[in-house]
Length: 297
Image (cartoon, rainbow, N blue to C red; front, side, top):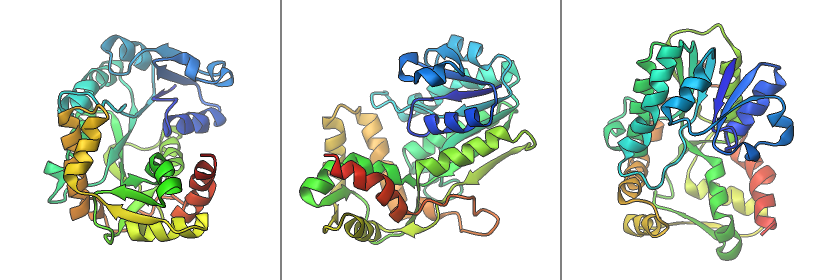
C-alpha cells in the first residue's frame, strides 16, 4: 500500500498517475475528494482531510508500506517552523506508530552549505527531513532546486510586459528542474521496495541556468524578446505581504532568495553517481508548457 499526500497538486497528481499505472494499491489523503477525477477516485482509497491532522494520518498510514510526503503551502502561518514542523509532527508520529516502512519526501538542496541555517523555507524543510528521518523509517529526501514550473506564475507578465521578475542576480547559474521529473523520481522510489537507510537524493535537472540564460531561451521559444528584471528585496517582500502572506512567511521567502543567490543550490556537484534521470531541459519545458500557457492568455 502506497500513501500519496497532496494528490491533486502539481507534483502529487503526477506521482499518483505513476503509481496507479504500475498497478499498486494506493491510498490518498485529500481535503476535497471532488478534485480527484472520477477515474482516479474509482481506483484509490480516499482518506478525506488534512495530512497535518493526527486523526487523518493515523487512518491513512495504517497498514501503509510507503508514503509520499509533500508539505502544502501555508502562506498565513505565524512562523516558518509552524508551517513545516508543526504540520509534520502528527505525520511523523503516525509513521512511527503505524510502522510505515519507507518515506519519500519533497525537500530542498542546501544541506551542508554555509547558508543552510539562514535560508527561510529551506532551513525549515531540512528540519522537517530530520523529523521524518527520526521516525526510523527508511527515508529519502528529494533535494530540489527551484522548479521550472514556478515561471508559469509570470505567464501574464511575460506576455504583457515581455519580462519576468525575481530578486536574484541575473548571471548566477543554478540547477533547475521540472515537476514532471520530480514526480518520476519520487514514483520510482515508491515503487522500489529494496532500498533501506536514510539519505538525500539530489534532483538537479539536466543543466544549470542563470536568469539571463532562461530569458534567452524563453525569447527563442516564444519568438519575441523577453527579459529578466531584478527587483529589490523590499519590493518583493511588500508584494508578498500585499497579497496576504504573513510577515513571517514573507521574510522566509526573502531569506531563501538571499541564500539561493549566495549559492545555496550549488552545494552539490554533478557527478555520474548523482546524475538522477531528470531529462526535461528548460527549452523543452518552455515548448511543452510555458508557450501554450502564454498563448492561452
